[in-house]
Length: 136
Image (cartoon, rainbow, N blue to C red):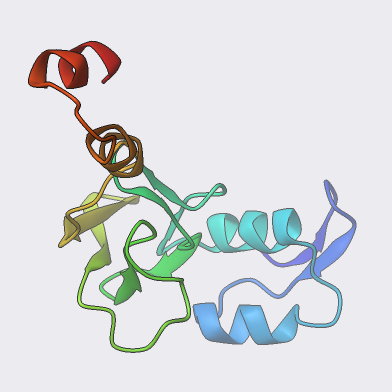
């Protein structure tokens, strides 16, 4: 679908490659308009909030062209832009059935949202295993 995106009032070039759409909308895009345009065009996995994993955190992967992958740092290990992080997650966009596109994820993360809390508890002097179990 091309032309004006009525919901957001911005031009959606439609029927182009993902990179071309992103470039075409560079000056006028708002994120919701861009994601809607990509969704309408098809061939793209979309997660408006980014990919969220209940233990490993939120990864800034909002859209990805089908049959492409991106690797991101695990947020409880390294900042997003840190080079050479040992702990990463890889996201691939796959067509799981006709016109249905979903992220497939492989996580190489160890720390979770609970790791820091647990480390704080066990760092307390003279704490017993029973105390750890009660506090955690």
